[in-house]
Length: 297
Length: 228
Image (cartoon, rainbow over all chains, first blue to last red; front, side, top):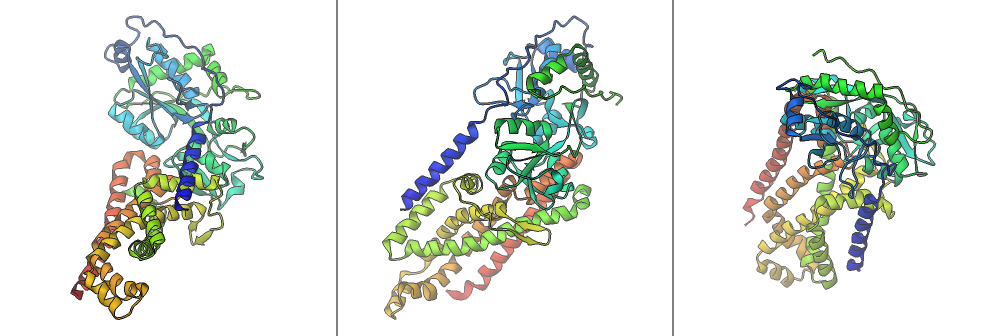
């Protein structure tokens, strides 16, 4: 009797892990084909971080692995996909490094918690991991951009009659531990339910443990696409997140270079192409690129 | 430090969750663990075998897997705690909280069982024989003679198990309960510049909480020492 029960337990755990592994990103698109650019002598000032990286021919970029549409890596692929990654590729290519060469470019997984320490310790050279620009973060790391504007929305079960965050006062709303989203949820009067990953939150919404989850609309759209017909995104954006690029305060010269590359991508349409290949889709209009911050500091 | 003081209310609420998780699963695991220990040393072969299998299976499984079973796999197969919805002031004890309490209890009670069993083994065999000789049944001998002595002998290991439980509650922070560890992560995200100060403050509060438990255990040990 006992044995049967433990068998059922193991079966259930095995089932849960298989289901978790089954998710597929919003689309099968490999993204935009970005070619490495020739670096002329003197393009980067001698001694700058960019010159150092271009000379070494190696770079480490911090990205998310669990956010479909922004930064997502499944078990079978070598390079993560998503909008963050596309922008990272543009920056890498500008250094004369082939963004698809995994020997030269390391796409290191950074979770919300370790983005600042990784930059401070030099473990990653750049962070493009749905990294909202905030004043507090700018005290310890460099941030520039934004290359994308998004806002927090709510994801609920497809048959739910919740219309937005207003309907969730006093209810549990899931988001990732240590993220800005979780605080915005609490500020809006809901009870925050912390989880380790966004996929776990989506799982909780699916099985009814929580009524809703909330984070940047772009992440929710990706999750809703993964679970088509079971989840939907509702409500207006109730916060503004300015997604930017993180770099180390030790090399402030990177700010100007990043802004330069972003501006060029805005002008020549690479930015729009990157958007369409990842977050865009049927019925999603490509927005105007946001205005870049100055690199005064 | 300011980051903690400015959010004192949130920090207090987070530690209330931590303490509640600890107290509720602590008491439940003591009760359930004692029961398991009694089953294991008892004369009924089926119960003794069942308790042994349970303890072996659970004790060798990582806590996180057990919690994930109750929190994520459970709801998929219809095991949920949605009927629980208690509000105490600002604290909500909901289905997620209940799942964490159940997971922690299931896990900790196996360790309590083994600690108490070690206490039972420390009771001289003559005590049990004497209890049987004066006509006490197994339950009576257990209740009146063996367990009281076993508890005294097992205060230090049981206290260790409970301290481990107090620290294990931090796992619940990844599973939907806004306890101290989850709150610490939020504060650090909010105020990156003082991450070291925030971390140290929370670590110190944890040390204080553990010290309180150790102190209580110490007192019990002293008070009960005269017995033999």
